[in-house]
Amino acid sequence: MQNVLVTGVTGYVGREVVHQLLANGKSVTALGRSQPSENISFIQADLTKADELNLALKDKSFDCIMHLASLPGDTGDPLQMVDVNVNGLQNLLENARMMEVNRFVLASSISAYEWYPATKFNPPDYMPVDENHPCRPQDMYSTTKRMQEELALTYYHQFNLPATVLRLTAVIGPFGRGGGRGWRKFAEQLEEGVRVEIPHFSAEELCHYVDYRDVARMHIAAAEHSAAAGQVFNCCGPNPTRGSEFVEIIKRLSPNIEVDVGFPWSMAQGGEISFDMSRAKARMGFEPIYSVADSIRSIKDWVDAGGLVEDRTAGDTSYGGGVEG
Image (cartoon, rainbow, N blue to C red):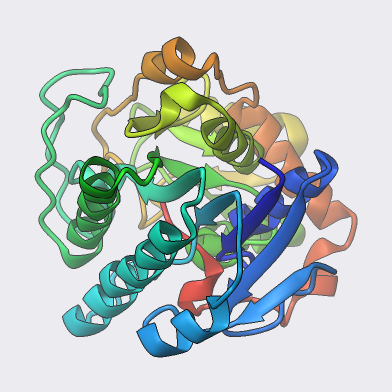
């Protein structure tokens, strides 16, 4: 893999994917509706407009496509949800098939199982949840993520497009764009230094997060390992985290700040959920390395370095902003 096309580069996950690809000496091209801030090649096109996309990608060739562009949550408009998340992916998959890319990596979500903060939490059948757990989405965001997975895997089975699906759990990182917009509020509260809310309904709630750097690492691993083709992988951190542990992490970084539970986008809504990563280890030799403490420190360091001041007006709410776990 040398020449990579990435969608959703304005999101905090996509931004890190680009950063790591460039650090690994890869040639990176962004595809989207607006020019990214990174100094990389750029193709302007709307994924939902097949003719426009086909023209933009005509005579182009890439070894790998990493698709992170998606609506970062349920917009309340079912037609828009399907048009962007499903039809947009379909258009890109068709171009990937014509190009005969060596790998297509799709950033999906653990919401494809059914867990999305906007809907009532239904406990998993077993824990930790592995990739064989039943998928039973009940809202438009979760349903369109599951539809994305089926589309990508259909292109693998029917058209021999080597696609890999990554089911991201809640991704933690700085910048807070697109799917990470909730962490932007968290960062702003850290900046104020008075009170911060964490995404747990209670101190006992067990949730499972993943660091944005591990997500980028896993995209690259999925693109480079032949055993990843045609597979679905959970993408989560080394261990799940209880609300009480989350509080302790923040207190170590900011001893005088008040920490409250009750963040409205809690994953397990007071219950428990955790995910299994053994398939990724067995097939790709991949393991996450960043803890929740590492993730929270990355946000705190970014805030302390003036990141919020510099990035105050650069938030992205478009679908190019990336996915949400």
